[in-house]
Each structure stands twice: as C-alpha cells, then as structure tokens.
Amino acid sequence: MKFKSLLFIAFCFVSNSSLASSSTLECVYKKYADPEGVHVTKNEFILRYLIDPDADKVYVSGNNGSNEVVKVPGNDRVSFLEVTGTGNVMVTTITNTMDTVHSRNTVVFGGDLIPSQFYGKCTAK
Image 1 (cartoon, rainbow, N blue to C red):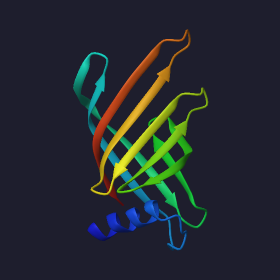
Image 2 (cartoon, helix red, strand yellow):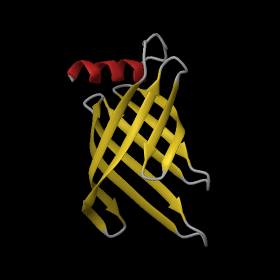
Image 3 (tube, helix red, strand yellow):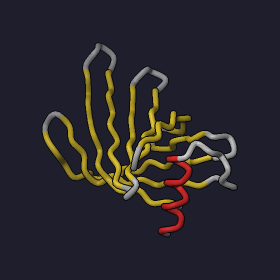
C-alpha cells in the first residue's frame, strides 16, 4: 500500500513517463463546506484518477462521468484541473501524505454561483 502511494507520488511530481503501467488513485471525501458551513457527507463522494504515464495523461472518474484533467505538479503536492463541458472549474489537490481537497466553482444557468469544497483522503489502487 505504501509502495503504491510512493509510486503515485513519483509519477505526479516527476514529469518523466518512465513508469510502466496505469494506476488509479481513489479519493474519498467525507466532509464538505458550502456557504452555509462545514458538513459531513450523507453519501460518500468518491473521485478516481486514472493515471496513464505512457501517454502522460490523467483522467478523473466520478458520479458525472469521466474527463481528462490537467496535471499541475508542485512541491509536496499535485493538483488536477478540470473544466466541465459547461465551463465550470473543478480543482483537486493531493498532498504527498495523500490528504486531498476538491473545490468546485459551479455557476448555474442564470449566473448563480454554487461554491463547494470537499475534504478527504486518497489511496493508490
């Protein structure tokens, strides 16, 4: 388990695509914040990141389907940027200790902003 986490971190922080096979990172979010405050999720919110080092691409899979995301490496963390078909921006940041935050900047028809931020933990699969 720890080896898989280290393998994931090596891929995310080094842009070299020398890793041999795809892997999945599963992030489980149990708390979230919105304009009303911080809450515990009623149902687990799970995002899965499929990492394809051969193609140097990452895909997110969640409750609304799958999309390619942009990998933004940093010191002791990696972030994934997703822009939905409607132009909403979602950002997930994962630290080297596998803590994670997922931020949604959703604007609905009519221009109303529905911000939310989810807090959780990731594991390499």
